[in-house]
Each structure stands twice: as structure tokens, then as C-alpha cells.
Image (cartoon, rainbow, N blue to C red; front, side, top):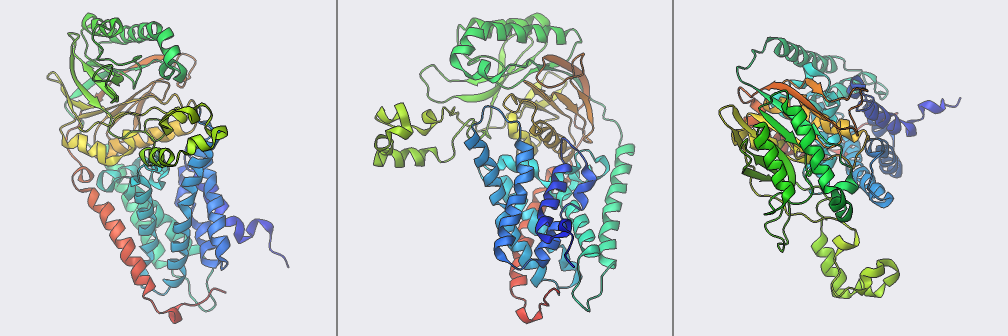
Length: 544
């Protein structure tokens, strides 16, 4: 009798990644994350053909990669396919290693059954730290619990990787309860129940923390501007110059409207200002300064910093303008976005092409660039090359408190936000230009990163974005306010959001010692793999 097609094990990896995708925005079915990996674990346990063990998980992993990135604009089809393929390729070593430890390590003591969880965490850490690929960190398993506030509180101890670890324990427990057993082997229900009980205790503790934590004494009222400036307006030089006056007029109008609610600080998002903000004699720069002086409220404004017109270095910066209309300080973005703000390996590519004159040998491929004496891949790809900053500045707002301004994807990196807190920040203010995302699900993923950083550091985190999502997040991860216009739309629309949030009243365990958990996971995963390799092959039973 043939097996039902739906129960063919070749489909199990696809079931896992479909459930994985549904656990994230826009679906937000976060409970599915707690057992989404069970089908692929069963597949890895039973499948014996290596080409299937490599190919099927790779193909299945394209589902969330495509879903998260679907709707991106201003990227070529080649860029898009390259991005999701690189992400998917990470599934190959993970599948091979998990298959090895699941099958060969079955006879280990029960406590070592958590070994695959550490391997997955090590995989997430590697994916989050490799340059150019670290932006894929928005898909970490822990972010699926961004709306599960009781569990989310665990991030204040071990961060997003701690949440991932809990979710993996849940998957491991369900896998042990339902996995096919070789003949004669008895099912162990005690260890899975212990893991589920541990998760329940973490959720109970998180619930208690949510409703018993004392309110902080200090608050700050912040105004967030969402100007909805499209990318051609902000990046194309000719269109930028043609509309520069209109853009500045819009920024000033929205700023004055927000000022009517008397915030302590007004934030204008990343690169909203057309051109460099430090240009001497630029009347548009003076208009912004005069606006700050007129309303009597300090501003944060995102713009380019260029030391001088002939200087090659250009920085993506946040300027702090005082209520008197003077530039007090500036923060230069450190973590640049690959392809959008720098090209990984560009110097190596340029050197190789120029050495062998490749661009001259293939004029049909390189077009007008085949006639230049010195080739630059950045010009060929029409990419902007910026210089990274070197110092994580923290600004002081009179007697109210201190705040830092991570830019764009810098809220994805827990290490950066923790460093801002170490430097004395009591509030984190993200300025971001997500116009290239438009209304893609990646917007919601980006918000979950902000939510996780707020809980990890026990700090309010506000987001001023160009086209959305502009929001205010409390230290416990609750999204307190989200900008929406009168029609209820919050993306690709202009407006402002004003609200009060508490300043940080103390550091968390993660803020001070959280990096030790990451290091422990990597070390334990390596030792576990080595220990599994050392197990005699004869001790391993074949599945029926």
C-alpha cells in the first residue's frame, strides 16, 4: 500500500520552512515556531541519500528567504536571487551536521540531546557576524517571538539567541515525543516534559516581570517625523537638486506641526536632508537651523557628512542640532549596508579586472565602462560608496538625559546597541530610510529587531523612519505607539508621531554579560560535534 503523498518524507523540509515562514511577519503565527523544525528533524533522521539531504533543505530554505525579501524595490532580479541563494546555501552545512549528530549521537546520555540546539545557535551566530551576510540576522528563530511578551523577557538575560535556544528546546521536545523509533526502542517522555516545563517556567517568570516591574521616574517626550521621501528623490542627483527645496520645506512643515505638542526632541530620519548638512553657505542647511531656533526644540536630522567638496570620504550621519540652531555633535554610521552603501570585496574585484584589463576584453558586457582607463565596480553597479564611522557617540539632551542614534540596520546588531548603553545612553533613537523596502514584510522584521534590542538593554527604543514603520517601543518590548494617518495607513505616507517614553533605569544581565552565552554556545557546539565524531560507529543503530 502506497504512502499518502502528503506524508512523503521528501516534503518534510518544505513543511518545516512553511511553518517557519508563517511564524514571522506578516502572518505572525508565532506559536508555530515551537514545532516548525520537527518535520525536517524527522527527515534528517530517516533520509539516507546524501543528495536529498543537501538539495531538499536548500530548496525548502528558499521559502522564508523569498517571503522575507519579496517586494523589495530598487534591486535588480540578479541582486535579489543572489541574496536569497546565499542565505539558502547556509542550510547545506547545517543539514549535514545535524543529520550526523542526530543519527550518530542517539545513544548519548539524555542531557546531550540539547546538542543540536547549540549547533543551530552557533549557525545563527555565524550568519549574523559574517560581513555582508550579517543583515540576514532578521530571520533568526528568536525573532519569531517578538510579539510573545512573556517569553520575550528572557532576552534581558541571554538576548535573541536565548530566545532562539528556548524555541529550539521546544522543537526538540516535540521531536522526541513524535519521532519514529527503531524497533525495540522505548520512547522517552520524561526529558521532553522537563524541557517543556522549563519553557513554561520562563514564560511564567516573564509574565510576572511584565506586571510587577516598577515604573521609572524619568521620561522624555519625543517627536518622530515620517516625511515619505522616495528613493529617486533622495538618491538621484538630478532629481534631488530639482526637488531639494520642496523636500526641505516638507521637513520644516512636519517639524513645526510636531512642535505644537511640545516634545523635548524631534527626530528627522536617515538621509532625509538633501545633500551634505555641513556645507557652509548652504541656504537649506540654514533653514533647518532656523527652524530649530524658531520652535526652540533640539533636532536630530539624518544627512550626509562630507568633510569638503573635494574630499573622497562621505558618511551617513545623524546631526544633533540644538534649540539655538547650532550643530552640537554628529554620529557617523558604522555598520554600512552591503551593496547599498559599500561593495564587499570591491577593491579585490577592481584590482583583478584592471590587472587583466577584463573590462576592455569584453566590451559587450561592460558597455561604456570598457573605455575607461581604470575600472571601478562601484561605478559599473551604480552603487554608492560611503565611509564607515569609528565612534559610537552618545548625545546629551540638556538636563533630561542621554541618548544614542543607531542608523538604519544598526539596530539589527545587539553588540552595537549594547555598546551605546555602555557609553551612557538612556534612550535609543533609530533613524532609518527603508524606502527601498516599500511595503515588503522586511519592514515588520526590522521592527522586531528594534523590539528585541529594547528588551535586551531595558531601554525605550523609538524609530523615526522615512516611509515607515515609525513607532515607539517600551523597555519590556511592548510596541506602545505606531504612526498611522487618518486612513489608518502607516507605510508610504507622511506625518509625525509624538509620545512620551521612559528613560532606562538600569542595566540588564544581557547588557553586562550576555556575550558569554554566545561564546558558550559556539564552544559547546564545536565540542559536541567532536565528541559525537568520537563515538564508535558500531554503537549506532540504523533506523527501521
